[in-house]
Every structure is written in structure tokens, then in C-alpha cells.
Image (tube, rainbow over all chains, first blue to last red; front, side, top):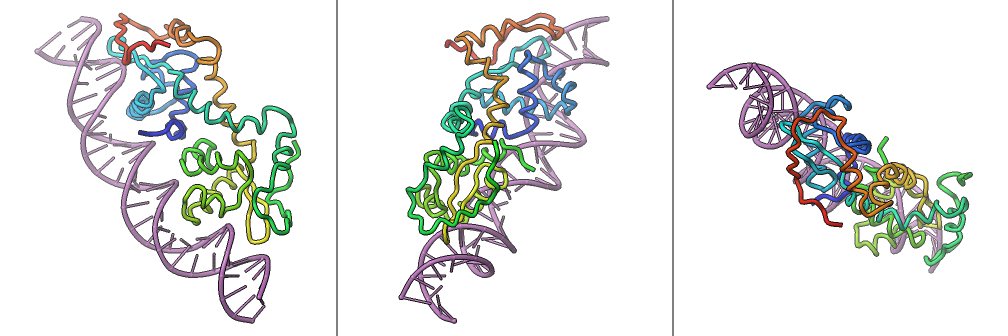
Length: 119
Length: 119
DNA sequence: GCTTTATATACCTTGACAAGCATATGCCCA
DNA sequence: TGGGCATATGCTTGTCAAGGTATATAAAGC
């Protein structure tokens, strides 16, 4: 089984998801609005469906697809531990930088790979 | 350039990120704690670094890696529009299901692909 | 029943990427 | 300065997934 992260790694799938945020859509609607060949849409919808990101309803010859919240919540849960790095204060990074040294450092030359970000 | 989503799609990279949440780590520490061959660690760190997920400090022969908040925030931003589906009420799904019909439905047979989830 | 519309699937090709292994680079210390 | 430790990089290979094209399934309407 594929992780939720791999599912949304694909740009077309993210586009489909974003489209479904406003309301449910048929395959044909998605196809037209995203200017994407129909088999491509169907295949991505299949992946999304099997991963639980969307569900479908039969409407005559059409299938209406809509979002399901659970897998997105899983992504959100993974992000949670990292959220403290930016959500609390502007200087969250600074606090992080000060919480160092459980390694065995010798000299600390402190040559940063990047310039210190000015938030 | 690669999207932040593709970067974190790789399980080993997510493991490294999670490890760095507690504090910065040297390559050797990551290698031992995740039981991962050293070249593998270095290569993933390179990907993470070039995508802005981590930055490094030179400490003699070691390189200390630590997290950077920005790219994760980007992920969080993408998730934001979907958050209304679960964060507000228990019946967020229900409300979504009721906000339908901008398609041209004919009969509405309502054969759900899955059983209606009982939250 | 036949045609049209809507969606799904099968097959093939191609590209991307991760792992494994070997090797290079760089720094420390005796 | 030579050897050992820490990390980075090069090369090769196997795998997997996405796109393209064609075709299958199924319902609608005449």
C-alpha cells in the first residue's frame, strides 16, 4: 500500500483534489477543467479512490467524485510535530538553534551553509 | 525544481526529518539511529538541503544538520483549504455531501462506492 | 437493437529515482 | 606527512509509475 504522501506527490492528483474542494465533480468535468486526457483523469481518480482520498457516486453513466477527509488528516498529523517551528513565534528558528549540543562537538567553526534567514 | 511534496514522499527522508525534530544531528548519528548506509543518508540529506528542508553547519569533520521551517509551511498552506472538511464539526462530511448539484444530474441512483462512514 | 456518451482498463514505452558499491574529498592527530 | 575518521559523490542497475493509444464496459435515447 502507498503512503498518503506518495499519493499527493503527483501534481495532477493535487490539482484534482483542489478542484474537488469546491464541490463534487464528474470525470468529464475534471477532464475539461484541467485539460487532461480522460484516461489520465480516470487513472488518477482510481489511485485517489483506492487510497481513500475520494469516493464516488453513480449518476447514470457518470461518476461523481468527492473528497474524503481522513487521509488528508493523516498528512496533517505528520506535520504537527514540525508546526512548532514556525507557528508559535517569529523567532522559532532561533530557539531551535539554541537547543543544540547533544552531539560531541569539537570546535564549532560555524560556517553556515546558508546565510542566516531574516524573518 | 521539485515540489515539497515529492521531497517528503520518500520514507527515509521523512524519517530523517522526524529525527531532526528533537535536535540537530550529525550524518553519523542519523546513519546509526536509522540503520541506513552512509551514502544513502548523505544523498537524502543533499536532496533535503537543496530543497531547503534542512541546513548544515560544519563541525570539524562532521556536518550538523538541522531543520528549516519554510518548506514545511508550504505543505501546510496547501492543506489549509481542505482543513474545513474535518476541523470544524464532526459532520463536516455531511455538509459537504449536501452542497452538490452544479453538474447536470439525471437520476441520482446514489450507489455509494463505500458505505457511509459512521463518525 | 444500434449509436452516442461517459468512464474504465490493458498494454507498451519511457523516464525518474533509489539502492549498492566503490571511490574521492577533507579534516584531524600522531 | 601519513593514516584514519567523517562525509560526499560517481556509476550502474533494477524498479516503478505516469503518459499515450487503443479498446472494453455500460448506460441513455432514439
